[in-house]
Length: 240
Ligand SMILES: NC(=O)c1ccc[n+]([C@@H]2O[C@H](COP(=O)([O-])OP(=O)(O)OC[C@H]3O[C@@H](n4cnc5c(N)ncnc54)[C@H](OP(=O)(O)O)[C@@H]3O)[C@@H](O)[C@H]2O)c1
Image (cartoon, rainbow, N blue to C red; front, side, top):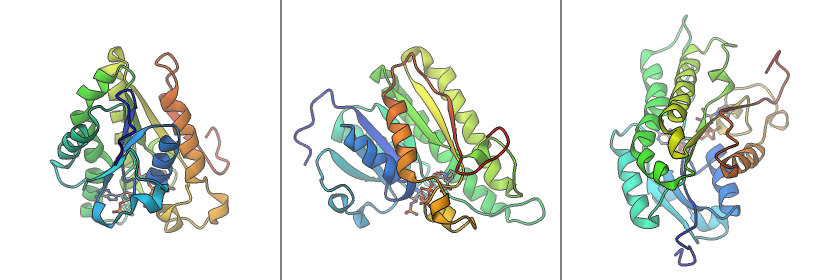
């Protein structure tokens, strides 16, 4: 498996890559020639050949965001397999409803754990290798809920605002070593998550493939063309 990869092939680690936005980004980056290290909760249940039409330069690894060591272990296994790291995409995420009027603190904890601390641990683990790349990229799938407070789900918003801070922290910490971080901020995207949470029709939502095309473009831009935040909406909002 993956014998055709040359030492120069760029490698992307993508969490939440078995479905939704993560899978669309994985497919896009694979088309662009990246080798893929996919972080998935149940790798044994994921059929790479079915999802990608090939298994070449693609491998799956266990990644459960709530386990503290999961990021480090995935990184180590990925380096054993591919030998380098150029792009880290944090797409694994959850949506629970937590308002000020109503909501369980355990749901807030769960969102902070998966949406913020998972990416934090992965970035901490991966940053040395991303610095070594010289053109390291971090893509955090945040949300327009990380840019404004539009509905009463303050729990989800808190987790996404925190992810925005993390994304900007990467830029500050590793800019001089060529690492560039993007916080991608979509509105409703046609995935299981939004289909369960919005009354918009699926056709009215942004497609994961369109987001993936944007990510594919941005990670390949040179270090001198960095986009820190990208706001992508499927419907009109003042200034967004
Ligand atoms: N869809 C939207 O409208 C929208 C808008 C803005 C931002 N986002 C953000 O985009 C990201 C991707 O969302 P999506 O729309 O692709 O959602 P999705 O279709 O529900 O997929 C969520 C992904 O996250 C994984 N995941 C969930 N909990 C996990 C955990 N504890 N450990 C590891 N992986 C876990 C899921 O794995 P399993 O299959 O094992 O559950 C799945 O791969 C999320 O961060 C989300 O907040 C989504």
